[in-house]
Amino acid sequence: MPARIIVTRKLPEPVEARLREHFTVALNHDDTPFGPGRLASGFRAADGMLCAVSDQITASLLAAPDRRLAILANFGVGVNNIDLEAARAAGVVVTNTPGVLTDATADLAMALILAATRRMTESEALLRQGGWDGFRPTAMLGMGLQGKRLGIIGMGRIGQATARRAAAGFGMEIVYFNRSPVGPFDFPAEPRPSIEAVMAEADIVSLHIPGGGENRGRIGAEALAAMKPTAYLVNTARGDLIDEPALIAALREGRIAGAGLDVFAEEPKVPAGLIALPNVTLLPHIGSATLETRTAMGMLAVDNLIAYFEGTPLPSQVL
Ligand code: 8YV
Image (cartoon, rainbow, N blue to C red):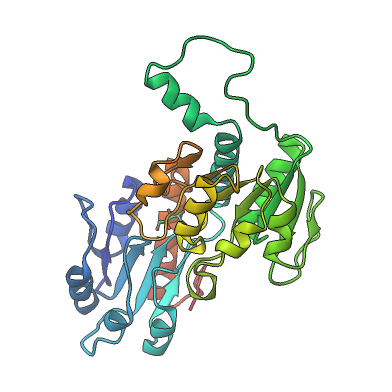
Protein backbone atom coordinates (compact mmCIF):
# COMPACT_ATOMS: atom_id res chain seq x y z
CA MET A 1 0.00 0.00 0.00
CA PRO A 2 1.38 3.45 -0.87
CA ALA A 3 2.23 5.67 2.08
CA ARG A 4 -0.29 8.40 3.04
CA ILE A 5 1.08 11.93 2.63
CA ILE A 6 -0.58 15.18 3.66
CA VAL A 7 0.53 18.33 1.84
CA THR A 8 -0.16 21.47 3.83
CA ARG A 9 0.07 24.06 1.02
CA LYS A 10 -0.76 24.24 -2.67
CA LEU A 11 2.35 23.39 -4.69
CA PRO A 12 3.32 23.83 -8.37
CA GLU A 13 1.35 21.39 -10.55
CA PRO A 14 4.26 19.09 -11.58
CA VAL A 15 5.08 18.55 -7.90
CA GLU A 16 1.49 17.64 -7.04
CA ALA A 17 1.34 15.30 -10.08
CA ARG A 18 4.49 13.50 -8.91
CA LEU A 19 3.12 13.17 -5.38
CA ARG A 20 -0.06 11.58 -6.79
CA GLU A 21 2.05 9.07 -8.76
CA HIS A 22 3.89 7.83 -5.68
CA PHE A 23 1.57 8.22 -2.71
CA THR A 24 -1.97 8.29 -1.44
CA VAL A 25 -1.92 12.02 -1.14
CA ALA A 26 -4.18 14.67 0.42
CA LEU A 27 -3.53 17.97 -1.37
CA ASN A 28 -4.54 21.43 -0.19
CA HIS A 29 -6.40 22.64 -3.29
CA ASP A 30 -7.60 25.97 -1.88
CA ASP A 31 -4.31 26.64 -0.04
CA THR A 32 -5.95 27.53 3.28
CA PRO A 33 -3.22 27.44 5.97
CA PHE A 34 -3.55 24.54 8.41
CA GLY A 35 -4.35 25.48 11.99
CA PRO A 36 -3.21 23.39 14.98
CA GLY A 37 -6.34 21.17 14.75
CA ARG A 38 -5.84 20.23 11.11
CA LEU A 39 -2.13 19.63 11.71
CA ALA A 40 -2.95 17.37 14.66
CA SER A 41 -5.40 15.28 12.65
CA GLY A 42 -2.76 15.05 9.89
CA PHE A 43 -0.26 13.73 12.41
CA ARG A 44 -2.79 11.02 13.37
CA ALA A 45 -3.85 10.08 9.82
CA ALA A 46 -0.72 10.31 7.65
CA ASP A 47 2.65 8.61 7.38
CA GLY A 48 4.32 11.78 6.16
CA MET A 49 3.68 15.49 5.79
CA LEU A 50 5.03 17.95 3.25
CA CYS A 51 4.95 21.14 5.31
CA ALA A 52 6.16 24.74 4.99
CA VAL A 53 7.30 27.74 7.00
CA SER A 54 3.65 28.68 7.63
CA ASP A 55 3.09 25.47 9.64
CA GLN A 56 4.11 25.58 13.30
CA ILE A 57 5.17 22.03 14.09
CA THR A 58 5.14 22.13 17.88
CA ALA A 59 6.29 19.78 20.63
CA SER A 60 2.69 18.92 21.50
CA LEU A 61 1.99 17.76 17.94
CA LEU A 62 5.18 15.70 17.89
CA ALA A 63 4.63 14.15 21.33
CA ALA A 64 0.98 13.13 20.72
CA PRO A 65 0.62 9.44 21.74
CA ASP A 66 -1.64 8.63 18.78
CA ARG A 67 0.78 10.02 16.20
CA ARG A 68 1.15 7.96 13.02
CA LEU A 69 3.38 10.43 11.16
CA ALA A 70 7.02 9.37 10.70
CA ILE A 71 8.51 12.04 8.41
CA LEU A 72 8.24 15.81 7.92
CA ALA A 73 9.50 16.92 4.50
CA ASN A 74 9.84 20.66 4.93
CA PHE A 75 9.40 22.85 1.84
CA GLY A 76 12.24 25.28 2.49
CA VAL A 77 15.81 25.25 3.72
CA GLY A 78 15.01 26.90 7.07
CA VAL A 79 13.42 24.51 9.57
CA ASN A 80 12.76 26.92 12.45
CA ASN A 81 9.01 26.24 12.04
CA ILE A 82 9.68 22.75 13.43
CA ASP A 83 10.56 22.04 17.07
CA LEU A 84 13.64 20.02 16.21
CA GLU A 85 14.34 18.86 19.76
CA ALA A 86 10.82 17.46 20.03
CA ALA A 87 11.14 15.85 16.58
CA ARG A 88 14.40 14.21 17.62
CA ALA A 89 12.85 12.99 20.88
CA ALA A 90 9.85 11.59 18.99
CA GLY A 91 12.09 9.92 16.38
CA VAL A 92 10.38 11.85 13.54
CA VAL A 93 12.60 12.28 10.47
CA VAL A 94 12.97 15.88 9.17
CA THR A 95 14.20 16.88 5.71
CA ASN A 96 14.62 20.28 4.02
CA THR A 97 15.39 21.72 0.57
CA PRO A 98 18.92 23.23 0.55
CA GLY A 99 20.77 24.27 -2.60
CA VAL A 100 17.87 24.61 -5.01
CA LEU A 101 16.81 28.03 -3.69
CA THR A 102 20.26 29.58 -3.30
CA ASP A 103 20.27 31.63 -6.52
CA ALA A 104 16.68 32.86 -6.24
CA THR A 105 17.22 34.02 -2.66
CA ALA A 106 20.56 35.68 -3.43
CA ASP A 107 18.92 37.43 -6.40
CA LEU A 108 16.26 38.80 -4.07
CA ALA A 109 18.89 39.93 -1.55
CA MET A 110 20.51 41.92 -4.39
CA ALA A 111 17.10 43.27 -5.39
CA LEU A 112 16.56 44.51 -1.82
CA ILE A 113 20.07 45.99 -1.69
CA LEU A 114 19.28 47.93 -4.87
CA ALA A 115 15.76 48.84 -3.74
CA ALA A 116 17.02 50.22 -0.42
CA THR A 117 20.05 52.08 -1.71
CA ARG A 118 18.25 53.52 -4.78
CA ARG A 119 15.14 54.52 -2.79
CA MET A 120 12.87 52.55 -5.09
CA THR A 121 9.93 52.19 -2.71
CA GLU A 122 9.94 55.89 -1.89
CA SER A 123 10.37 56.88 -5.56
CA GLU A 124 7.60 54.61 -6.80
CA ALA A 125 5.23 55.83 -4.07
CA LEU A 126 5.88 59.44 -5.14
CA LEU A 127 5.06 58.59 -8.75
CA ARG A 128 1.95 56.50 -7.98
CA GLN A 129 0.62 59.21 -5.69
CA GLY A 130 0.89 61.76 -8.52
CA GLY A 131 3.67 63.66 -6.75
CA TRP A 132 6.25 63.50 -9.56
CA ASP A 133 6.60 66.90 -11.19
CA GLY A 134 9.40 65.99 -13.61
CA PHE A 135 13.11 65.33 -13.68
CA ARG A 136 15.31 67.09 -11.15
CA PRO A 137 19.10 66.58 -10.95
CA THR A 138 19.00 66.44 -7.16
CA ALA A 139 15.83 64.42 -6.56
CA MET A 140 15.78 60.95 -4.97
CA LEU A 141 19.54 60.63 -4.77
CA GLY A 142 20.60 57.25 -3.43
CA MET A 143 23.88 55.51 -2.72
CA GLY A 144 26.00 53.82 -5.42
CA LEU A 145 27.28 50.31 -4.72
CA GLN A 146 30.66 50.40 -6.46
CA GLY A 147 33.52 50.34 -3.97
CA LYS A 148 31.10 50.11 -1.02
CA ARG A 149 31.40 47.40 1.60
CA LEU A 150 28.83 44.61 1.90
CA GLY A 151 28.74 42.88 5.28
CA ILE A 152 27.50 39.30 5.10
CA ILE A 153 26.29 37.76 8.35
CA GLY A 154 26.41 33.99 7.74
CA MET A 155 28.61 32.89 4.85
CA GLY A 156 26.69 29.74 3.93
CA ARG A 157 25.37 28.95 0.47
CA ILE A 158 23.07 31.97 0.18
CA GLY A 159 25.51 34.34 1.90
CA GLN A 160 28.22 33.32 -0.57
CA ALA A 161 25.91 33.61 -3.58
CA THR A 162 24.91 37.12 -2.49
CA ALA A 163 28.54 38.11 -1.89
CA ARG A 164 29.57 36.73 -5.30
CA ARG A 165 26.89 38.79 -7.06
CA ALA A 166 27.85 41.93 -5.14
CA ALA A 167 31.60 41.51 -5.75
CA ALA A 168 31.57 40.33 -9.38
CA GLY A 169 28.54 42.23 -10.61
CA PHE A 170 28.62 45.45 -8.60
CA GLY A 171 32.27 45.92 -7.62
CA MET A 172 31.59 45.75 -3.88
CA GLU A 173 34.09 44.79 -1.16
CA ILE A 174 32.96 41.93 1.08
CA VAL A 175 33.44 41.52 4.81
CA TYR A 176 31.71 38.71 6.68
CA PHE A 177 31.08 36.94 9.94
CA ASN A 178 30.63 33.19 10.05
CA ARG A 179 30.46 31.11 13.24
CA SER A 180 32.99 28.56 11.93
CA PRO A 181 35.90 29.03 9.51
CA VAL A 182 34.75 28.98 5.90
CA GLY A 183 36.33 29.56 2.48
CA PRO A 184 38.31 30.05 0.32
CA PHE A 185 35.85 31.67 -2.08
CA ASP A 186 35.98 32.55 -5.77
CA PHE A 187 35.71 36.26 -4.84
CA PRO A 188 37.68 38.44 -2.40
CA ALA A 189 36.20 38.50 1.11
CA GLU A 190 37.61 39.25 4.57
CA PRO A 191 36.36 37.62 7.77
CA ARG A 192 35.60 39.62 10.89
CA PRO A 193 35.51 38.27 14.47
CA SER A 194 31.91 39.25 15.33
CA ILE A 195 28.57 40.34 13.94
CA GLU A 196 29.08 43.79 15.48
CA ALA A 197 32.49 44.15 13.78
CA VAL A 198 30.87 43.50 10.39
CA MET A 199 27.98 45.83 11.15
CA ALA A 200 30.35 48.63 12.19
CA GLU A 201 32.21 48.78 8.90
CA ALA A 202 29.59 47.72 6.34
CA ASP A 203 27.70 50.12 4.08
CA ILE A 204 25.08 47.40 3.67
CA VAL A 205 24.51 44.43 6.00
CA SER A 206 22.81 41.32 4.61
CA LEU A 207 21.59 38.57 6.96
CA HIS A 208 22.00 34.90 6.04
CA ILE A 209 21.93 32.97 9.33
CA PRO A 210 19.18 30.59 10.49
CA GLY A 211 16.33 31.91 12.63
CA GLY A 212 15.06 30.66 15.96
CA GLY A 213 16.97 29.50 19.05
CA GLU A 214 19.91 31.63 20.10
CA ASN A 215 19.70 33.73 16.92
CA ARG A 216 16.28 35.12 17.87
CA GLY A 217 16.62 38.90 18.32
CA ARG A 218 20.38 38.71 17.62
CA ILE A 219 20.18 41.90 15.56
CA GLY A 220 18.97 44.08 18.42
CA ALA A 221 19.62 47.59 19.71
CA GLU A 222 23.30 46.92 20.37
CA ALA A 223 24.09 45.46 16.94
CA LEU A 224 22.08 48.19 15.21
CA ALA A 225 23.94 50.85 17.22
CA ALA A 226 27.19 49.57 15.72
CA MET A 227 26.00 50.46 12.19
CA LYS A 228 26.94 53.65 10.38
CA PRO A 229 24.12 56.20 10.03
CA THR A 230 24.57 55.90 6.24
CA ALA A 231 24.22 52.08 6.22
CA TYR A 232 21.37 49.80 5.16
CA LEU A 233 20.11 46.48 6.58
CA VAL A 234 18.75 43.70 4.34
CA ASN A 235 17.06 40.51 5.57
CA THR A 236 16.09 37.58 3.35
CA ALA A 237 16.73 34.97 6.08
CA ARG A 238 14.28 34.91 9.01
CA GLY A 239 12.34 37.77 10.55
CA ASP A 240 12.97 36.76 14.14
CA LEU A 241 16.70 37.51 13.74
CA ILE A 242 15.84 41.18 14.08
CA ASP A 243 14.39 42.88 17.14
CA GLU A 244 11.76 44.72 15.09
CA PRO A 245 10.95 47.50 17.62
CA ALA A 246 14.70 48.25 17.88
CA LEU A 247 14.96 48.41 14.08
CA ILE A 248 11.94 50.70 13.82
CA ALA A 249 13.50 53.04 16.40
CA ALA A 250 16.86 53.07 14.57
CA LEU A 251 15.17 53.85 11.24
CA ARG A 252 12.87 56.50 12.71
CA GLU A 253 15.69 58.29 14.46
CA GLY A 254 17.94 58.19 11.37
CA ARG A 255 20.53 56.02 13.12
CA ILE A 256 20.64 53.89 9.97
CA ALA A 257 19.72 54.94 6.42
CA GLY A 258 17.20 52.30 5.39
CA ALA A 259 16.27 48.63 5.16
CA GLY A 260 15.01 45.95 2.80
CA LEU A 261 13.03 43.15 4.45
CA ASP A 262 11.53 40.00 2.94
CA VAL A 263 10.83 38.26 6.26
CA PHE A 264 9.18 39.25 9.55
CA ALA A 265 9.19 37.97 13.12
CA GLU A 266 5.49 37.03 13.20
CA GLU A 267 4.49 36.44 9.58
CA PRO A 268 2.13 37.41 8.10
CA LYS A 269 2.03 40.30 10.60
CA VAL A 270 4.15 43.27 9.53
CA PRO A 271 4.60 45.92 12.24
CA ALA A 272 2.72 49.16 11.50
CA GLY A 273 5.90 51.02 12.48
CA LEU A 274 7.70 49.50 9.49
CA ILE A 275 4.82 50.11 7.08
CA ALA A 276 4.81 53.79 8.07
CA LEU A 277 8.47 54.29 7.16
CA PRO A 278 9.31 55.53 3.64
CA ASN A 279 12.91 54.28 3.65
CA VAL A 280 12.06 50.58 3.97
CA THR A 281 11.21 48.12 1.21
CA LEU A 282 8.89 45.39 2.49
CA LEU A 283 8.24 42.14 0.62
CA PRO A 284 5.95 39.21 1.56
CA HIS A 285 8.55 36.40 1.96
CA ILE A 286 9.24 35.90 -1.75
CA GLY A 287 12.95 35.03 -1.56
CA SER A 288 12.53 31.70 -3.34
CA ALA A 289 9.38 32.63 -5.25
CA THR A 290 10.18 31.78 -8.85
CA LEU A 291 8.29 29.03 -10.63
CA GLU A 292 11.55 27.21 -11.36
CA THR A 293 12.74 27.37 -7.76
CA ARG A 294 9.45 26.53 -6.07
CA THR A 295 9.12 23.55 -8.44
CA ALA A 296 12.68 22.39 -7.64
CA MET A 297 12.00 22.77 -3.90
CA GLY A 298 8.84 20.68 -4.20
CA MET A 299 10.64 18.01 -6.23
CA LEU A 300 13.42 17.79 -3.62
CA ALA A 301 10.85 17.42 -0.84
CA VAL A 302 9.21 14.62 -2.86
CA ASP A 303 12.65 13.00 -3.47
CA ASN A 304 13.09 12.91 0.31
CA LEU A 305 9.68 11.32 0.86
CA ILE A 306 10.23 8.70 -1.86
CA ALA A 307 13.67 7.82 -0.49
CA TYR A 308 12.31 7.50 3.04
CA PHE A 309 9.51 5.11 2.09
CA GLU A 310 11.82 3.12 -0.23
CA GLY A 311 14.43 2.85 2.54
CA THR A 312 17.20 4.53 0.50
CA PRO A 313 19.48 7.40 1.68
CA LEU A 314 17.64 10.71 2.01
CA PRO A 315 18.97 13.52 -0.26
CA SER A 316 18.70 16.22 2.41
CA GLN A 317 18.05 14.96 5.91
CA VAL A 318 18.13 17.38 8.86
CA LEU A 319 17.24 14.77 11.52
C1 8YV B 1 10.58 29.13 1.47
C2 8YV B 1 12.53 30.01 2.86
O1 8YV B 1 9.85 29.48 0.37
O2 8YV B 1 13.64 28.05 2.26
C3 8YV B 1 13.39 28.85 3.14
O3 8YV B 1 13.86 28.71 4.29
O4 8YV B 1 12.49 30.92 3.59
C4 8YV B 1 11.69 30.14 1.64
O5 8YV B 1 12.52 30.14 0.55
C5 8YV B 1 9.69 29.06 2.65
O6 8YV B 1 10.40 28.64 3.76
C6 8YV B 1 8.52 28.14 2.37
O7 8YV B 1 8.36 27.13 3.31
